[in-house]
Image (cartoon, rainbow, N blue to C red):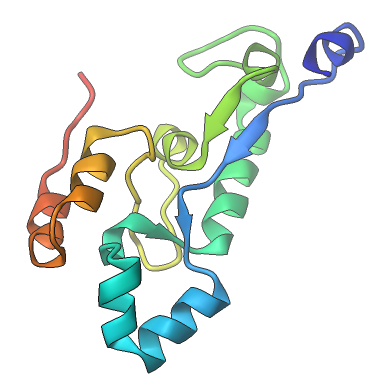
Amino acid sequence: MAVELKKEGVASFSLWPGVVMTERMAEIRENDPEKWEREMSVGEGYVESPRFVGRALAALLSSPSSSSSSSSSSSSLMDRSGTIQIVAEVAREWGVMDVDGNQPPSIRSLQFLVGLSLPCFLIEPVHAIRIHHV
């Protein structure tokens, strides 16, 4: 689809969120903390609100580079056409924060993978480790 639409000047990409805190997940966390710990075992810093996706997309679509074909420090929408965009990576690129002020790690990051593989009591200390891109 992206190839065909690119000829018409239309960008098409896939936007993938990480672990989204749905209403059902929030209900389990609030009403059954034992089940949350046992089955979900995702640190608070690793979940995204549904609004985080919208905020990241809004930042991407309203960026100056989204309306021009010339690329500045960030690529234009046409450059992203046909690609997979991870919500957390787009958010980090544009400085977008979630509703709670958090910026969850990318689902492709080592920080995310290590955090999911450690026991819950070790997740928060790992979340405090920030790996900065150089």
